[in-house]
Length: 355
Image (cartoon, rainbow, N blue to C red; front, side):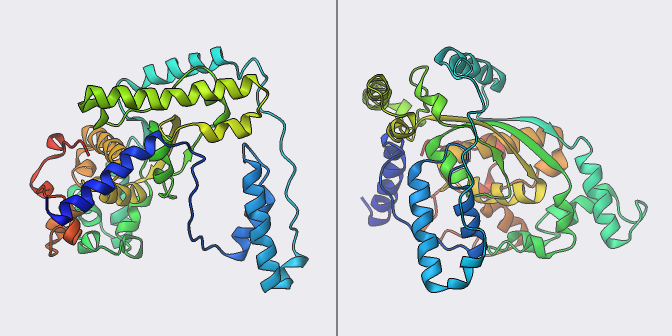
C-alpha cells in the first residue's frame, strides 16, 4: 500500500471510529478569541444546557485575561443565572421524545438535509441585484448574464480562488440576498464540524432529551457495507444508552450522563443560509475529502436547489469544479490529498462515495 493511501485510510478510519466514542472524550485545542468574545463566554456560561465544565473553563480563561490585563476588571464579568427549564417534565418524557423523532424523520422524506423554504424569486432577485450594482438595465444585461457575473467562475474568476475572496467583490455580494432553509439530521460528530460554518447558522437542540427514549443514532455509510462491522458498531453505540439508563436510575444528573452519549447520536435541527455563504460551504463540503455526512448533506442541498433554481444550482460545485470553470491550475487544490476521482468531469447526479 502506498504511504499516501495508508495515511488517508488511517484518517478516514479515525473519522468513522469517532462515531462510537462518547462526546465526553478528552480533546485539546488552541482557541483564539477577542477579549469581548471571552467576556460573552463568561456571561453566558450558565445558560441553556451548558455543563459546569464550561463555566470552569471560562473562569480559568477570564482569570488568565485579568492577570494579563487588569483593565478588564471594570467590565461586567459575572455569569448570568441559568434560566428555568423551558418545558415541563411530561413534555420532556421518553414518549414525547419518540413522538418528536418519528414526526421529524417522517418529514425528512428520505433526505439528509431537506429544503423546506427558500427565496422564491431567488434567480430574479439575484439578477436584479447584479444589475443594480452595475447600473444596468434588463435590456443591456439579461438575467442569465447577470447571474453568470455573480456565480459563474468563468465570468468571475474570484470564485475559483482558494482564499475565498467572494465577499470582496461587488457583484458577488449580490449572493447575500437569496436565502435557503433546510431541515437536517446529522450525527453529533458531523454536526460538530458543520457548526464551523458560522454563516450558515442552525437552531440546534438541547441534548438532554436524547438521554431518554432509547438509542437514536447515525450509522456511517461505510459501516453499512459490512454486516459484521455494523453489528459490532450497533452493539457499541447502543451500550451507551444502556449505561446512561443505569446511571439515571441511580440518580446521576442528566448533565453528567450526557457525557456518555456517543458522537453518533442524531441531532435534528433547522439551518438557514444566504446564497453567498451556502455557495462557499458547498465549495468546501462537496469535495470528496470532506466529512462524509456533511458531504452527503451538501450534495442533497445542491441537488434540491438545482431542481428549483437551475441557474443557481448549476454553480454549486466542489472546489475543483469551481477552479475548472475559472481556468485555475491545478484543478484540484488538494495537492497530495487529491481524492483520486476526477470529480470536475461529473454531474451532481453522478456523485457517489462511501468514505
